[in-house]
Image (cartoon, rainbow, N blue to C red; front, side, top):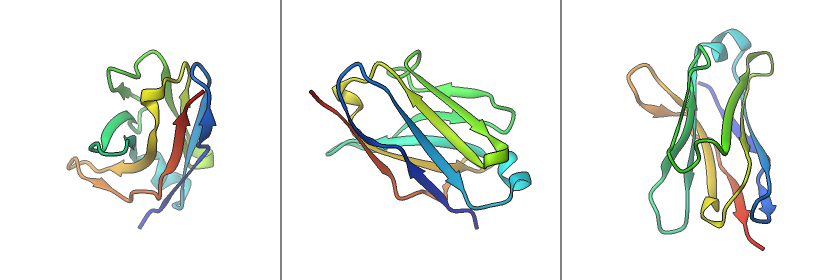
Length: 119
């Protein structure tokens, strides 16, 4: 059973950048076939999909982050990244990564990493 560990969160000013990492515990071959997604959950709000990347590196983004965030993967490092630029206060949330199975289920949630955008 895969486990994901997120890192890279922190406090940043509006307009700043952060890069989040999501490291998997499985071997490279298994990781390479996963679709992996980043979600976020702000206080009092539901968890929402931010971006996802398939095994073929096809990417999808939530409308509010498209053009500002970039999801990528390095299979050799078994890691998915989320580069976040032009951050806004409304991006403040706990960011989680998970695997999306072929059946569309979310599994193997990480513990999350806090991103706070504030001046």
